[in-house]
Image 1 (cartoon, rainbow, N blue to C red):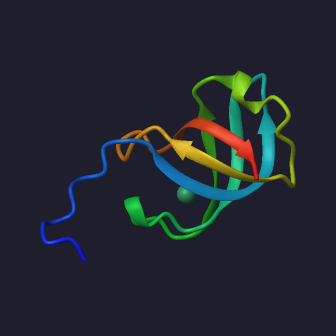
Image 2 (tube, rainbow, N blue to C red):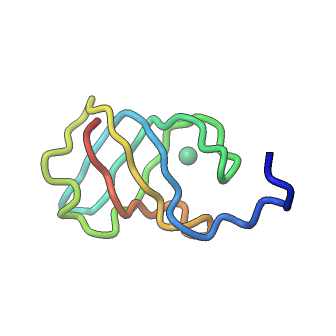
Length: 84
Ligand SMILES: [Cu+2]
């Protein structure tokens, strides 16, 4: 266990989940994601904006994915998404 208090999460935040909807034209993806402890999120279904819609190439409904959120303050923005 670390001696110091945990610093605020400033960098990308990793998560995993399943794609429930994808709209490359709109640059959005909906994920049924697992809990993300770094930002105290329980598991839930929600829609994200994808920073670069090209990242959605090859991503389809039902895919199991790992993804990164931009930061704790921009947690609705996906910066990376990849099939597991
Ligand atoms: Cu969520």
